[in-house]
Length: 508
Image (cartoon, rainbow, N blue to C red):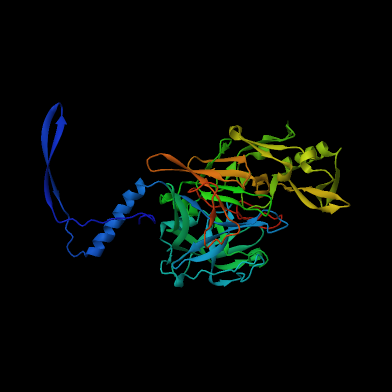
């Protein structure tokens, strides 16, 4: 099936028997080779059947000639755990399309939404969102995934999967906070806006497999910060990014830039944001999550005395970049020297205190003037530079002094480091899956960005991503462009509220 927006012209030719003379130069001599070309019989096939068959064929080679599009999703939310504590987007699924609010999570793979009927699914949200349920029977394009479908085997990469009595491919996701969801995989249309060439194309669609959850448990049942589901951006076969890139619709890359201040916001595109000062580190091969090789931590330019084996990747150990985690977490052997170094550096300027077991500081000064910069150093020479606001959280004020606490938490006895939105905010982060690397650079996420997509001819095209007007309706798609004709709207990106690690497999 050709991508939406591609004009397919079917030409019905008359039945021909052609004899073609072809001059071939062989061993310096010209020889005539006679090739008899005969048309296959179409007896019994109607014009509509022939047209449909041609459309499929034309779609295959036209798709190869088209440049890959850059896809954007509208986003809402903020990283701040004392406000919303999540980032989420809206996706449109089914025919006719229906909108769902879903958490954006790079720590899991599958897109799933609550389905009708659903046991334990919240029906209201403290985020003032109108929650919806997907009903496969109400979508003319929905079809269940059978147990024999090869995509059912792909689902086993991301979840506990099984088969129902009706031969439907099922799944179960268990999260580290004790919550879970289960249901069946279905295939249906997802709708999106994309940019191909210099043109914005709205309301495109493509078939994708996603989860139809019929049961939820634990924190997923709570209405205070409820959304309709989770949008997994992992790299396994059933992630939406993998499905769309394998269909030739988008590049095999996505990027985000999460705004930390002024109510949050940011950018999310299926494509690669390009910025001159970007640094990259390789992904650790054969890992289910976005594992990278963290090699050392420096505070105020001084490398901490931490055994490098603390950061080594092995079974259930290593360093994971995960936008679905609100804070950040260091392995115990790295956390203790990190907090000690921060405290020693600022002890003459602030008053260290403990608040519910967390290391905090009383200060009347700006944290940028008092607290040191931190550098996380990775394989390939890439460093992630953290400002004080990237590792501190303000709790409250006492007698005119602000209370700032270490926002990076300790994971005891597990050898895991998780870099969540506390440290990822105010940075462009690029997940270049084609080249198996992740890149980043500090950036003001209220500004526009350049996004590239490689065309079918190998040419790289660049687009300027403008910001979605916060005062406009997402339905109306009114874009506030910084540069005309260069639009890619933004992401706001989601994280579970609180200090708990939330995601299955990746998080505790």
